[in-house]
Amino acid sequence: MTDNPHRYSDEEINGVYRAIRERRDIRHFQDTPIPREQLDRFIAAAHMGPSVGFMQPWRFIRIADSALRQRIHALVNEERLRTAEALGERANAFMQLKVEGILACAEVLVVGLMDKREDYVFGRRTMPEMDLASAACAIQNFWLAARAEGIGVGWVSMFDPEQLRTMCNMPEGSQPIAVLCVGHVEEFYAKPMLETSGWERRRAIDEVLFEDEWGRKGS
Image 1: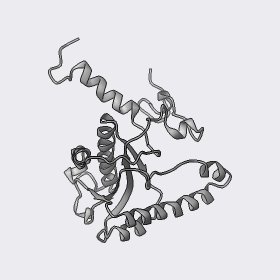
Image 2: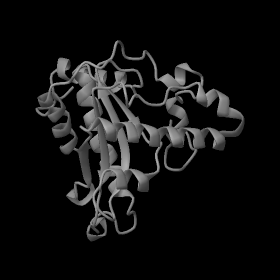
Image 3: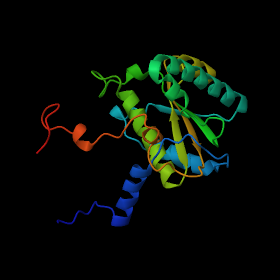
Image 4: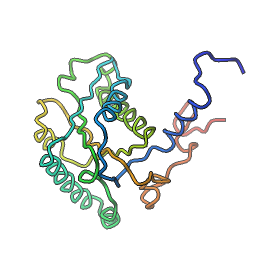
C-alpha cells in the first residue's frame, strides 16, 4: 500500500472510529458538574463543523437559569404527550421510553439556527434546508468530542419551536433545533436505547447502500 502522508497513526484512527461506534443518544445522567473549560472544548469542536457556504448557522444558548430549565422540561413533556397521541397503537410503548434527561444532566444547551439565513445563497439556492444539515454536523462534532472525553450527550427534539424560541428570547427568523443534555453517565449504552428496547433496529449496510440508481445493489 502506498504511504499516505496525510494519514493519522493507527492509534489515532482507531480512536476516531471508536468514538463514532460508541456514541450514544443518552437519557440517563449523573448530576456531577462539568468544568466550564470542558464544555467550551465541546462547543469549539462543534464550531469547527462543516457548513454550506461557510455560513456557520449554529448558535448555542447555555441554560444556566434553573427556572428556565424547568420550563423547557415542561415544554418537552407537553410534546411527549402529543407525540404519544399521534403514535396511536404504539403510544403505550412510547410512554415507557425515557426520552430526555433535562433535569438530571449537568448542562443543558439550546441549539438554534441563526436569523437572516436567507442572505446565504451559496449552496442553498435549490436546497435551503442545508442550513439545518450544517448545524447537524456541528452537533455531531460536539457529540463525538464529548464521547471521546467520556461525557454523555442527548439530543432532544420534542418541543414546539416557537415556544422555545420565545422562552430563550431568540430573534425573529431564528429556529431552535435541539435541546442538548450534557453530563456524566454511569455507563454508556451497549447499543442505542431504541434498538435495545425493540423500538427500531439498525439497518444492514446493504439496505442503505446502492449503486448508480436507487435500490440497485452494488457488486
